[in-house]
Image (cartoon, rainbow, N blue to C red; front, side):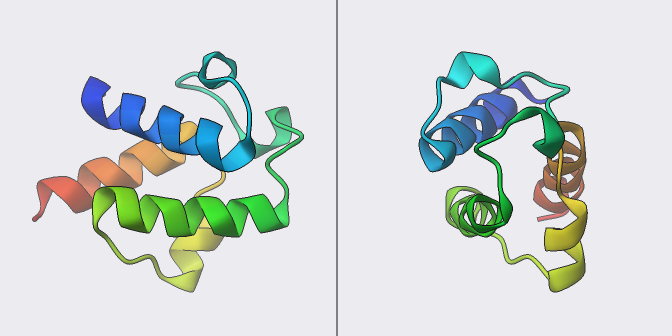
Length: 81
């Protein structure tokens, strides 16, 4: 796991959800964070696009519902650029 990427993701999630960054770890899923509802999920996806300079498809947005899934996607996407 790229620690810089994880820290950026965690901070982005914390700001988007209005929660403490410490509530987010490398295994956090959408079901574990009550603030991560459908609207917050869309806001997170937009924030990730800005933070990591990428564009997400509808299928990717639907799939990225956990920190591990998001990090895998970032690792695949960011390492291919």
